[in-house]
Image 1 (cartoon, rainbow, N blue to C red):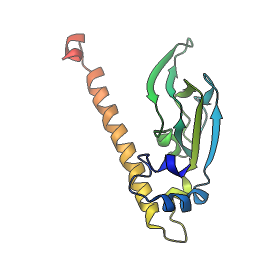
Image 2: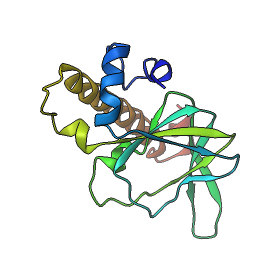
Image 3: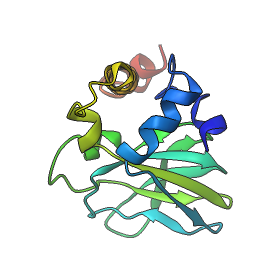
Length: 158
């Protein structure tokens, strides 16, 4: 597991032995999902950050009539559901569906946000990496929103 995690944005700048020491603290558990299985369902709440370890998944949003719109594709090493995990009680607005067979690691968020008694320096680094990931996604969403909110199709294309 450590050899996969060390190459993710969440654990950037953290040594493999430090990641190994963090795993019990983060209460990491993995789950496998078959192709087309629902990993997370809209309306659920989540307290863990999800990290796709292997496979491909889609973040989808369903409308009132049951039509699915793909919001984003997720590949190995990418985080998802972190914004919902950071907001206690928030309900997922989207579902996550396995496009291929997937393995997902769920990392409990609370130990990340609460420094452990050992005062691990790498806790701060993981929180920094999580914040950077959230900020990057927020910027991409803002950019997309600026295009979508243009009044005419011509303005949107420009």
